[in-house]
Length: 270
Ligand code: ACO
Image (cartoon, rainbow, N blue to C red; front, side, top):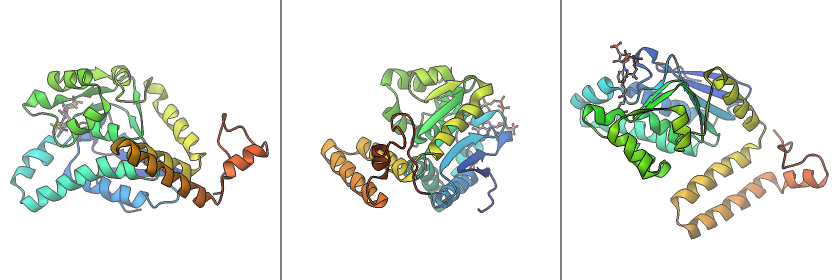
């Protein structure tokens, strides 16, 4: 695996943890971080050892949003070609790559999460936060608005009375509130954050990767397609899954009374 300047990568027993590693800048997303994340995810999608990905932050912050100095002030004086490249990568890794990764992606929100940091949370398939993590759409506080993809993806995830309230007021909110409004999956005590996230990751490692990829594809295609197109796509994914398995081994094992599908995963061939 290549070495990166702004992120750390740690692989253990099928789980790959990517840590945003700019703690002095509260893991704000610099142009280099966008380049690193784009390259890392592109490499990991083909990595057979990576069956689940966890995204988290070093130090007291998950992600303080875009780097207000490097992504905005300094970029304003860069040539158009550089601005275009950085904007493109910034959008791609958060909005396209995470969703189309074959592996499930879990955001483990350990602290501050502001502005563009929300798009990492919304792009991830599962999001677990420490109860004392703080969220905020702070853009309005500095005379901007939740730009780029932030408003676009939030309108998919939040009810207007929740999303508009926080976008207009710039007020911070707790992980419990993030759970209530459906921004995250679950808020847990800080002391349990790693344990609970790893338990979910290990559970996913036990699942058939062909099925996990299909769940993600069906979910996102369904969301973005008209119902009749979604139905067709779902049918095609289903056919492909059966072909890839060479049949229905999970159902065969049920018939042979080898396990109970309601209570756990079948033994798939590694
Ligand atoms: N961009 C660039 N640098 C940042 C950012 C950021 N988004 N957030 C924090 N930093 C830097 C600070 O400039 C400071 O650097 P310095 O030590 O060189 O002065 C360092 O990180 C520590 O910041 P503090 O404010 O001292 O840290 P603290 O833990 O007290 O507060 C907090 C953290 C609340 C996150 C605060 O830094 C903050 O409000 N940051 C801005 C958050 C924000 O508004 N993000 C939205 C960006 S816009 C977008 O994403 C679309």
